[in-house]
Length: 458
Length: 176
Image (tube, rainbow over all chains, first blue to last red):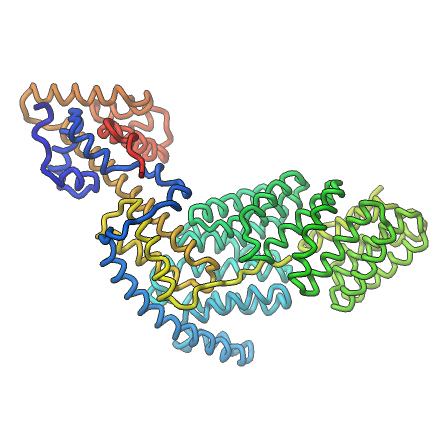
């Protein structure tokens, strides 16, 4: 027969798996090349194109019969090994906690010496704890965040692959430590160092194999950094890569979060429609039961985007349905954000009395909490209400109060410059609603970008 | 608004593994991973999970997604190896210095028939490779590809050729 004898039983399977000798491979390929229908039928059954598997729905409904025990022995063996590793890790985690406490009790200059010279600080869990500490400190104390991430980088540089369960895991941890250092520098407005740290993280990503989940986390921080730099197109592209990774990993909730973050990029880039589209997709993916805070954040942003795009009635309706979620969250910040949004929507519906009351309340609360920037933004919204009503004296008074708030917090030079322009216009009774909005929008943009310059309207 | 992670990891690893076991078997069965190759995939995925469990909110979804991804990579790697083997086998067969004329003639005829069913771009590339002995840099130059992309293009064409070898049923069967 053309192409020679049929291959031996089992040879076709080994051919598909590339396990035959070169000579056998050649003979089998030659046989198939001749178009033997019988063998083609067998190989086709053995060989599935990978594409047909890429259907999560199909996978979800896969059922395995009880008698399918071919994998049981493997699963038993691996589970046993993993349980042993898990038990070791639990000890390491406890050790990591202890080491972190010990490290942080030392004076700052001694910490680096300890890490450099003391072997027991070569601990992966210590690195994880420091990264986590850095991330949490970003919201409260950016300098502490930089310190913690810097220490994490020092720890990871002394780790070996076997400390982390493999070279891939170590590479992922290293890239993540650098990305968190970049993130910490960003929150403390040290932009050159932030860029340098992110550049290192990015180069580490391209150097070697990194677990996909780690890659997604690093890229997500990088995308947020690009957003702060106002490199919106790049930020969007990076978020797309993150979304693709989470999709591949089947992490639908994290995909939802990523869309929520990407929506912020669209919002800042002035693409309100794109922002709302992404927020709706994010809301479809985020589970309100398991992650109510993120779900509420997405709803909050959607209401805000609706308000910003002039769809005030839709914003009002959605706010009505979302109110229980704010109350359920219950913490003061979320309740203040609810009140602030109520003020904005009321203002959009021209219910100026309600808006004024809400903005006053919010401003006082932020001042009480020592959150000067938020208080100033709420003050500007209040000034907007007065400007819309033609209450020039009140606008002027609020403008001066806002300036004092900023000066007392000694924040952002350009923000103060913008407020000085606003005060000057208010004194001359020339601060209309447009100027209020312009200054408010500038303050929101400039918050994470001290290099931004305010240009006074002509 | 903050979007911090809130780990919700099954506190008992034993309970978690018991719960996820049938689903894992489902994935391996579905992807038809030979049991002897399952161990590496599962071990890598589970080790990654236990090492970073504090950062994983939904460990079951994470593990199944990771295993699924590794299964896909497994088959991609197997495919790549098969394409290379098919390529080497065909190159060796057409370059065989000795052999009955009739057999060589059959081989050329069979190869021509298979190549005939490929897209034009692949037909030209593989024809030049198998019948005229061009190596990748020469192929890039002759066909107008950049040297850096010729490898990918060749792999795609080898994939098309391999599919043709299994032409009788390659796209007919889908997972039940």
